[in-house]
Image (cartoon, rainbow, N blue to C red):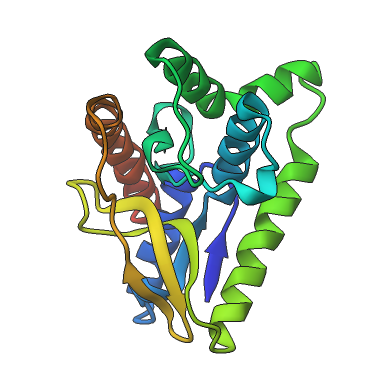
Length: 201
């Protein structure tokens, strides 16, 4: 199994995939882009806004792992939460730009190292549990996908002993979330193309 957390994930996962294809060892079910940090941030910000425990909140985050490609599906949050449209927009923007916010707060002297480590560990532990045969282990991850026009796309993934057991797809989204997906796909395709070109230089 290969879990890639090095940025830019939107491009590094396609790069790694191309390299493995060249060597005849590519298995799309066993390569993951770790986007768990976006889920952790979404859970935290939604929990803060509703005075909930972040450990008990789950917000799927789909798309990619940079800027407008990060799409929190607040309509699918568990437990179910409701916000006015302007707050949804503000929360979405905050989740998308959280990494930049941290860099600014540290005056360019670092990034979100602790939360990044936590997110990487969480994904790795989930993968290990699935490899050992635990059932119903689900994490969002940036993987080879035919869910949209983008060849790679992050969605909730059912993990299993062989890697991706099932891509759970996007599910039901509202009009605002659909508009975010529509805007993200062309950007993702550009990021992916950049990675593929780099790998095939």
